[in-house]
Length: 382
Ligand SMILES: *Cc1c(COP(=O)(O)O)cnc(C)c1O
Image: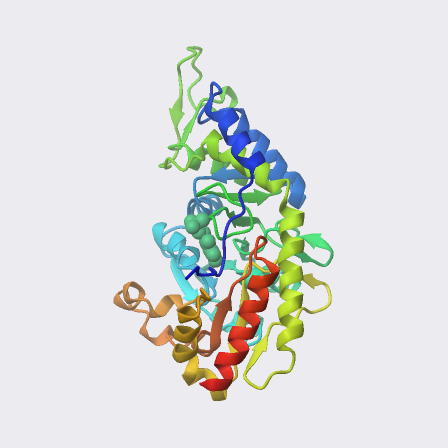
């Protein structure tokens, strides 16, 4: 039986052609496609700069590095996210502090942030869960009051809009991070990007992406005329995206509005089918916030949540490739081993209720109908 996955990339002939063109060009990496992709991203979201990386995780790590996040600092984020959001803080010796999430969106619970702020807090990392924008105006207010930095994890939210502007424009944050993993809105195989309006952050991220090395004459600490001369200014990594990947990204980004439109049409169809059913809730969009629907979560009502595993297993058996987003990060064995026991309850109720059903632009009408009818049948039976 063919399984309908919860998410899937959409690669077409023109994407393949773009990649082939780069494969037979002079540059496979560190060539012209990188800057072209970066310019396309920054002009799409409306920032001055974009820096691309070989994963969304590398992008997060680099953004935190650019802010100067270091040993002893704390960052506040959501437990309902992919582990990379907080792992990138651990890489730099910082301590992730997990606060609660809103039960109806899975986004960070704004009212729980202030209580978690300490003298060591340096950064807030809101995650636009499933593509639904966080209330960034409130985040900005809190950040301003306590002089904290903000990095948006928008891995789920390319193409979403907040107050009529694209998520990623950094009007409410220092930087925004995107991922180009195949389940995300556009893909480069693996890949990620950071957008920002700050030249300093842009420079620090470019340095970090390539071993901390610069060849830029204006940045050199010792003035040398030799053409081969370069300096290493920070302990960076090799986080570079290839031109092969960037050419795929350029081609994919041209279709982002179509991709998001298709995702939204599917979401509206699900909304209609599941309106006011007795078993589970679906997310609602508030005025001024337009989701890009990376995910379509259903949230079992408390009465039904102990049936989740049964519903999940039956759906999979019927070929519906559901997934659960996410196991709360602090409850992961590694996090427990470094002392996170008491945080494990945060986000637990949301996690216990959540199932993500298939949503991606190439999902066929017949498949959408199958998801709807299968779910309706199964849930009545359990
Ligand atoms: C996908 C994702 C990332 C980055 O993942 P990569 O696979 O490294 O691109 C970060 N945060 C969230 C919430 C994600 O979903």
